[in-house]
Image 1: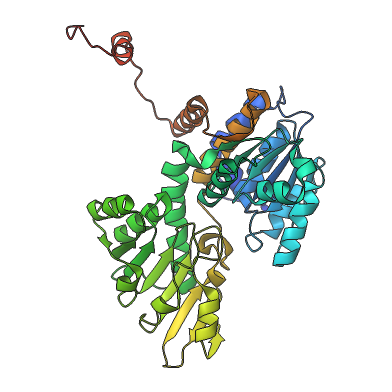
Image 2: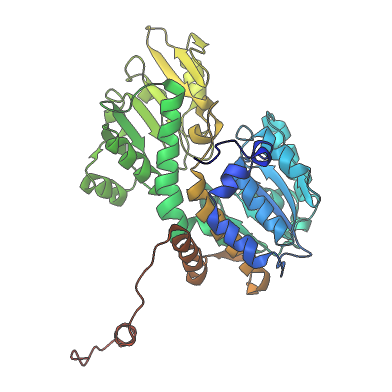
Length: 418
């Protein structure tokens, strides 16, 4: 029987486990270590600073980039990851574990003052700030990438207003991001952290999911698979119909409020759960947020309504209402899968493909020669990431025959015999 002793190098490396489970990034490292496509460029990264982000940062660095990194959320930073990266020459941290909101914002501004060439963003944190507060820096940025729905919404508004100073690839909207990171990554990690934090079951509970985009779809699907009764609230009639035919009950938040045991928001908008909804909730209702910003649950309303708060267990704030009801809020209304006391973020295997797509998009921007604006990631890049993931999994796909390829290209299909 082989030895089961731990590798001593792994014990001292907080990125070791993530690196072992990130084959797509590993393939990019192997392909680009020699040719160093980012040589001479400074890349700014804003993301949740956990191990999979660390592997992404070291991948950029191995490919020649000087990397500056900051958090995209002040409470999702893992200190051991920051320290591991910051000790490397050519990688610089603008982060520490336990930052206040003010320190978080100051760190991002300090990073931008270093005039990065490329920005790999989460939530449009750096891209919005560079345009609003450092326009002289924005004018020299080569391009950017964005990985979240909330960030895409901000970028679309900036693009509509004609203020974007450089091209940005909307990585969030690629199939490899939406179909895997959003659906499976957000779905699994959100519910896993709810269960770990509360030590309570999902099975048999009524779970109300606010928003039925890709993230909400993943949360609702995973909750039902765990045995929950699922209710979806939406503002878009098309997404509401999709939730209905997927087997979830569709209701307004006002209708769902008295019935829910667990409420999970994932809309990308604010004040989704408000005082009028909390007033109708049952004693012991639990609230969690999976959206990028801590505005989906109206925290000022909860604070105003409560006589007092308590902390029955780590990661749970209990609001005691005057009528005796207790409403439990997880992770202070921040991202439940990233900012709770036990949170590790999305599964590494999922983030491997997302960061692989960002890496491919950032590399492409160096030669793309695009005008300022928001762009879809070229399909060839998304397919490249998918192919590398399939290779890592040992899976194969068919290739089109010559006749099949010709059939796709022949709009008339005049001869059905071939």
